Image (cartoon, one colour):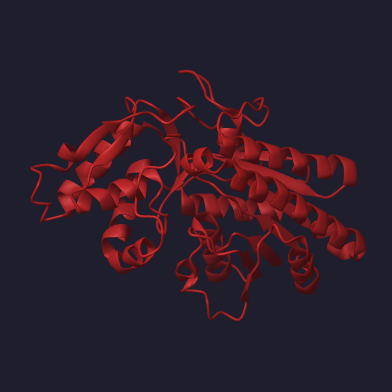
Length: 353
């Protein structure tokens, strides 16, 4: 198959491309604008493979998107390009609306035009796979899980923009007959994770003796999904999922934020021989800070549908995945340094002050 993947230089997109090129025989065209979070170093292991291509394209440029699709003639489009950090969406909501809503509209328009002109064989196998988030469902109470039929109730500019794009994708299936699929995933973590997100931020701050900022009381609950488990699920959905369907993808790992930070500190105690001079234990760096505006209390995914219908289950527990992730960051200091040479320097975002 031929996959056109948007946002392929990002955290999840690069994991999907590495999986496809290294473990399957398919071709990939990666379209990425290369914003601050897009890094071609994430794809160094496949960059020279003849089945991999890259084009620097902004999905907000409808003409460039259409040209790339018509040239490559994909069997599937996997749409991962998005502004994705909640704190940034609080500071710059316009960028999220532009990329996540209008960018998705451009892709749907170009994909529909391509699909309508394609031959019968191409049309029979074509899929438009939109990768979204569980944050579109809002916040759970102490009990219950998000299912594919949970009503949308987004609480941040980021989740509202992703909810909007989900609805557009559904509309293109219902109105125009484009064979679309939506997946909504829980919190990802793993190698090559940009350090504005919690787990890599805590790892890197801890080994440098910097504060570990925990929002509010730290009792917010997230369901953690290793990015390589997610990549396997996305490939399965793109190749075997049914048009018009939604699949939730979760890691079955509900953990409170404060406990995530404590687990990171515990693993670092075992792995780092020379801790920073300003502390006795890594947990001494934990610092409670003002909570994020509109902070959802709990997310948790019911991933039963994708298990029943497609046979996917996560391979990593949170403990095994976190251990692997910490090892990766400890062993890839040069990647981390090059990431930090850009604009983002691990400062607090999204305070609306």
